[in-house]
Amino acid sequence: MKENVRSIHPRTVAHAFAWVLAFSACALAASAFAASASADPAEGEALRPEWLRAPETRGPLAAAIGVDAQRAWWGIDGAVPLSFWLPRTRTNVENVPAFGLGLSVTGSATSDASNLHYSALIDRRTRLTGGWLGVATGGSGVQSSRFRVGTGLWRAVAPFEFEAGVVSGMEQGVTREVTHWTVAPDTFRSHDTTSVNDVDRLAFSTTAHSAIRWRFGRMELGAMGGLTLGPRNTPLRWAQATMHVQASPHVLVMAAYGQRPAASMAFEPAAGGYTMLGIRVAPWASHDWGVPRSTAPVAVRWRAQPLEDGGTVIRLRCHNASRVELAADFTDWAPVTLLSTGNDWWERSVTIPPGLHEVQVRLDGGVWQVPPGLPRTAREFAGDVGVLVIE
Amino acid sequence: MRRLLAVALFVLVLAPGRASGDEAEEARLRVRLKPELAASVIEVVRSTAAQGLPTAPLVGRALEGASRQADDAAILDAVERYAAGLVGARRALGATARAAELDAGAGALMAGVPEDSLTSLKRARPSGSLVIPLIVLSDFVARGVPVGSASNTVLSATRAGAADPALLRMRERIHDRILRGEAPAGASREELRALLLKTHPSNERGGREPSEERRP
Image 1 (cartoon, rainbow over the protein chains, first blue to last red):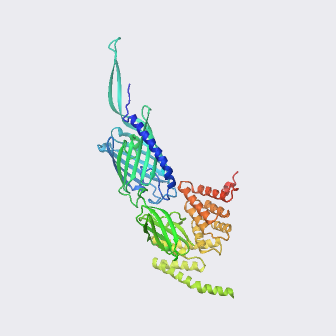
Image 2: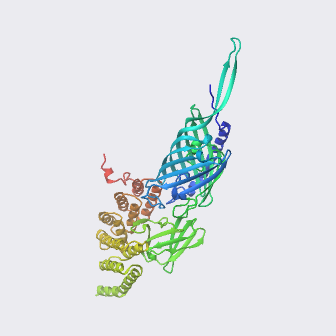
Image 3: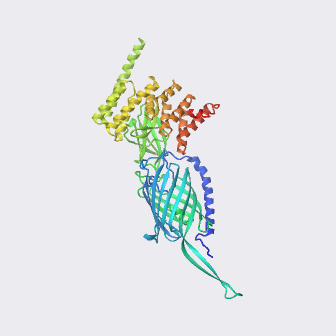
């Protein structure tokens, strides 16, 4: 007779569940406040789970390191856009499906080249929904598997993001074999002899998970939970609460409380299996590729106010911008710089004759875009432009 | 006699200004474009001006192309097509259409809206300005609303007497719906229905596509 002993303690899991429930209640309560402030995603805002590698949100490559209750770990992940027909940094307002290939390699402080963990996934995304399909292999100790296959779906309902996924594979696990021998020297006496052995064994396992994340400015709070079905079909519950803070366009600070099985992290190179602290660096986050959306410059309000002298003051409110330019037919499409007047407002006085005019703005040297709130029309050379009517 | 005096006054007051405006436009083109391209574009501009059509949008097209480093042939082609769009807009909107209406109409035609739709729009609002309805129409098409649905939405709203602010509010709501992930055609249909119900509460079937109305 054999008996499996799992490495995750049930009491700790229950504790983590309590935390996650408390956290979720706080997040839901806070959402009422957040919803009133920003119920809808801003135009041009790309939504998606952070862990799904997206070059347009943080460049083609990122590296993460962290420590959790069991080990120090690292991960490197890359992302390649597969939708070559779509401009890389262009906003996907049209909801055209885009495809990407994500690759990652992870290891622990004690890993050598032979027991690194590798994963590859293909994701399909529109602006508010997406799905992914991936394969993974490798790892060391209880984190390892011969082969894993996973799939998942996500949906953004700003400021929330919902995700569900399932990962199956041959998992390496420490199994404690307990063997009972009944010794009966004669018909009147007998006694049990028990021997216990820890053995490493591959077994088929399936892990299903769901997550909810709430983004507010540069902070993201998340709660993830799931079930793991092992060889004996006894479901193992697990949960983890996470907090991410985008310290700069290049640096993401990560913290987590609770536990996750290795299978649920197979495609997520910047995750820890236990209570952990980590940091992710994306050195190529830039305007050419993209920056995390919480640090990306974004135009949120447009004003055109006529002056008594016949001129017009153009005012634009932008977050995270250090340079704001405007190009329009009334500037002969030459870029002119707006001046900062504080509190995220930028302005410039221009002379605009009465009639119909076309205008675009550019933040920090990024792509030319339609000013917020203006009707748009398509032009041959400039792309979409905002339409301004001066009476 | 009074009429002759008015014409003379027009010539005295406006003609010099117009001539200097044309000269200024041509000077801007000569500064920004290569000499051969500038000459070709100026020829199109003069031809358009001779037909009494606005020329500022043509200059805008040419300078837009120059600032985005488009090649000369593409710039000239864009200017010629927009000039043809202005001619088409006047044909659809009538000889009394104002410059801004012609500009907005040409933009709509360039976006793929048929001339018939512009003519219907003119019939729906014979005396008022069509600048905002045409801008809203182009905006819908740019946001992915199919041309037929976009035309039907703006035309139905205008026929129902929706004023410019109501059209602009409908545009914003459709824009919000599209950002939330709704299909552009469905978003425009729903918002048109809401606008029509608000305009004529008894019209519960308002805003449906003609093809839907024929369904059993």
